[in-house]
Image (cartoon, rainbow, N blue to C red; front, top):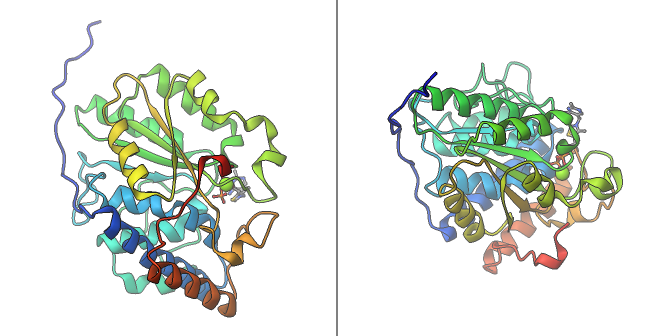
Length: 308
Ligand SMILES: Cc1ncc(C[n+]2csc(CCOP(=O)(O)OP(=O)(O)O)c2C)c(N)n1
Ligand SMILES: [Mg+2]
């Protein structure tokens, strides 16, 4: 049987084209919201959300993701899937900033009746592409979207953020194998490589996870590694992978769980996985964030030799 020739249909264009400096400012604001909403809720995963917020900010507001918040179901849109669904506060902050829903809703996180559940629910929030939280599934869902949009002849790209602890799930590697076999060059995975999972450092729980880049390469993926808190590096990687043909791409983003804020750094076990800050601690964390901004140090240094 002959392969069907499809003309790739272009979709919406990126809505926001903020500069790296503006993106840092956006991410600072959204980081504050992550701390505020989880502390108000008294539960949630602030450190897991903060490690991914710079990447998500760049995706949505740095001229990458082609979507239309007024028409979230447009078939030609790009897709973003947060496979590590416990970082929902980061996704909610980004979606509200993009205009998918009113920012006032953020303070209802995890309250009875609120659509902002502890993990994202695609049936209740526009812009949420997949209901995630049960780890390991998001990349497979991304493979499905990439195959479906290719069959339909759309030019849509699919982006999936996975966690390093999450990568211990076997399903991640089934998806990796499938994506490379199907030559899904419109699929980009981003690994939030923050070095920690729920019960401890990934290097202790699963020492064989290293070397991670070599594993993805061996599965047939194009791989690049970046500082996941450097807007310039994030944007460069996201632009670079668009040029890759016949292969899915993995961006290994070296990040800090809790974005280097002292309240999280002080915890050597798991950077306070799944714990909201108390109001007093939140005050300290917010003051630190504000200080970094005032000193013009929001662009976080994370030299290669310190990457987990
Ligand atoms: C299938 C499954 N098993 C266990 C959990 C509980 N759980 C939630 S977050 C987490 C750790 C995830 O670590 P990682 O992927 O590194 O994410 P991080 O919080 O570091 O961003 C675990 C085990 C879950 N949500 N789903
Ligand atoms: Mg982790």
